[in-house]
Image (cartoon, rainbow, N blue to C red; front, side, top):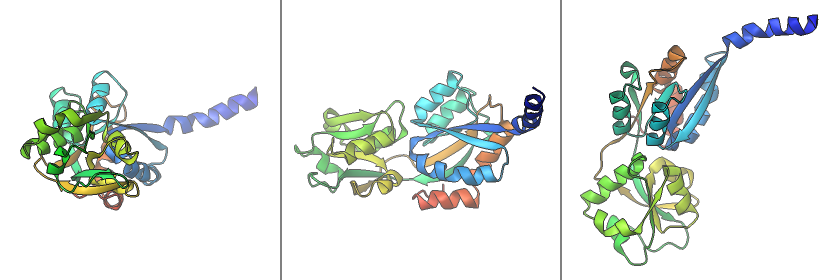
Length: 246
């Protein structure tokens, strides 16, 4: 018993110094953020990062419902603006740290010839994967782009809606659709399975903001992570995955 008590007494200071930081981040950041974790943790002894990746709108809804999150990272400004309007984030901590571009992708094998948005009207293009408009930023960027090209109404019957950008990528990679809209960074990680048919314009700039969640229990550490995203180490990792500076 004495040895057990001694062991507990020894471990208590270690437990007291431990900090877990929960970061809810857009699905397109999955690979880059996972690679960042060891570097950030190494600079913050006792701290561990826990990631929750999903569509930005879904993540914001979770925070609104009381999920214990410390940092929110969105793939668009609109969702972060909603977070600010609902007083879910500490607005003075908000910062943009990355940018991306929208691309039209097709499976590398068996896809019809697609080289431009207008080709989506071809009868052989039967299914087009896009993110859900209400909750997935890449879906809204896609809607803006197709609207600008005056194609939204024409292709709407062909649309297959996905829960996040990585699901769009999976649909295309598995050949379940003839085309889909993802970020360039997503296309890059699956370049053996998908082909970039076109880089797409006609939408709002794709920039990624991060902010400390207003109810964070680790506000200081959360602020450190947001600042870390703008530093040289994090920016080098983001660049490796194809993200641009905001």
